Length: 309
Image (cartoon, rainbow, N blue to C red; front, side, top):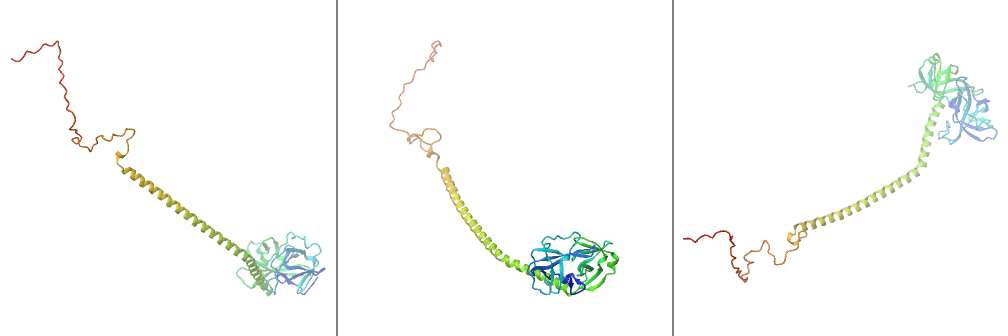
C-alpha cells in the first residue's frame, strides 16, 4: 500500500471517497474504522454510500447502505480517495469480533476512573497498526491527550480501558483541523438531513392539516344540527305539556253538577235542588187531603172507665 504520510489520523480518513480499483466505480465514503484495541490493529473500514454535506473540506456521508472491506483489501490511500480491491467480500464482510469503532468511546483506567472520551487515533496506513489514541478530558476544549496504543488493556462496544500510569502521563496534543472540520461536517449533515425531511414531509403535513380542518368543520356542523334538532324537540314537548296542563286545569275547575257522579242516575229535570225555595215549590191548586180519623182500637178485655161525675 502506498500512502502520502507515515501516520494518518482516523479523522483525516472519514468521508474520503472510496473507489473500486478494478472498475473505478464509486463505492461510497469512509464512515468508520474497525479497530481491535488488544492487537492495536485496524481490521476493516466501513463504507457508506449516500450524498455529501455542503462542507467539502471533510466529506462525511449523510446516509445510505453500509458495506465493509478488510484492511487487507485497501490498495492505496491517496489525498483524494482510498482505492480498494473490493472483490466479493465487500458485500458480506461482518464486523470482526473484538473490533469496534472506538471514536466516541469512554476512556477508563484500570483503577476504575473515567478520564475522558476517545476523540481520534493515529495509525500507520502501510500495515494498519494503531500508534496512539487521542482522548478529550471533561471540560477541556480544543486539546487532546495521547496514550500509546500499547497502553490499552481492552475495549468493548462503549469503553476503552487503559493503564492508569499511561493515562497519568498522557501528553497534551492539539486536535487537527480535520477533527474540527469533521464535527462541523456532522452538524451540517444533520441540518441538511432535517431540511430534506422537512421538505418531504411538508406536503404531508399540509394535507393532514387540511383534512383535520375538514373533519373539524364537519364535526362542528354536525353538532350544530344536533343542537337545533334538540331545541326544536324540546320546544314541541314543552308546548304539548303546557296544553295538557291547561286542559287538566279547566277540567278541575268545572262544576260538579255538570258531570254525573259515578253510576248514579241523573236527576229529573223538575227535581228540587239545594238552591230551590220550598215555598216556591208549593202547589196551591193541590186538593186538600180529607182523610177520616181512624177509630182507636182498644183492648176488649179491659174494663171501660166510668164517665166523669
